Length: 433
Image (cartoon, rainbow, N blue to C red; front, top):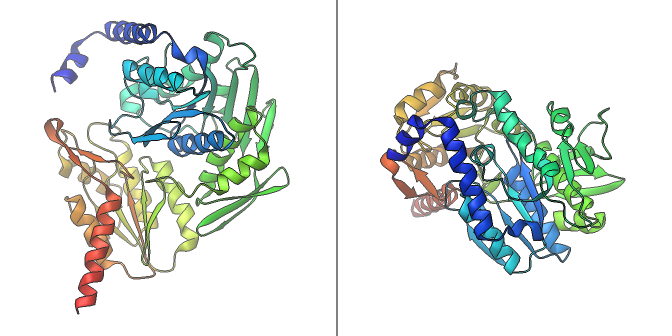
């Protein structure tokens, strides 16, 4: 509370000097470790964590010592631990300490999920990025940044670092862009040694290397597509995951990793925790992080071919205090795609949870929504009313380990574990009848 008040009353330029100073001092303290490794920055609105996971696993499969940070986890070679910060990019000292540890453990590559909020606070500064990749750009964090243009500008600063950071011997600076995204040309304007583009449809945009997927075929629980006359199978659903795969393939091909090895590695990845994660098959229960209208729409497009009965949605929209504009949009998308909607709590922070639900409900024209503020009870309700042919879609938190409530309170949480517990109770009750 005190921290947020200080941030509000402190002039912007003072905050920027503060963030810049600590970015420099923390890098200096750890002797600029990023300058001795190949640093891959992955940004975008949706798909960052999945792409980080894919890239890391491919690099490791190719025999490279690799470290990574995402909203899901930290990893240095075989050591993996959960990200419990409720913050994708750690603070400046924490991230430089992580890079120092990665270097000490002999890592050649570090894959960093790089956020606009992190960039805004200079957490990316004094990190010598060699590859900058963007998955997509959709409206998000508008209230924090002030406008979509400023949000895009923040993302662009990652690409700008490619021409500003110290060049390592024989290491090219590479930018990798989703050509299907309408902002592709903006990110390709920044100087780099090589420009790569990927997408689902061919484009006239000029790049040095181009990867275009074709013949996409979604057959639960996999998606198949073709690339360079090779068939690729991923254990993920949806065209958006084909794009995430293409981003990962582009990054790894740029590092001279053999395409056949990349394909084999992708085929061995069986999902990412909390991202379209299947918790049950009858009924089919998905848990997903989806926190933007575009992400929610993409999920519904992916699961639509699987629909036999109802789609029952547990929806919390975005957490308290930010991106309020999303709430009716999330409600509208759910109204268009779900047979039943259960509105519930997510991460309200200091905002009134009932007010958040009121705003979501403004986008729901039908009378199909019910409100259960207690998220555990909401999940329980969805599972109780679901029939075997129904799909239950629980969005907003994915595999997040905490829920953030008022006055800084954080409680342990895991949507997936709650689903398993409640399903066990339902099965036990049926067995006792």
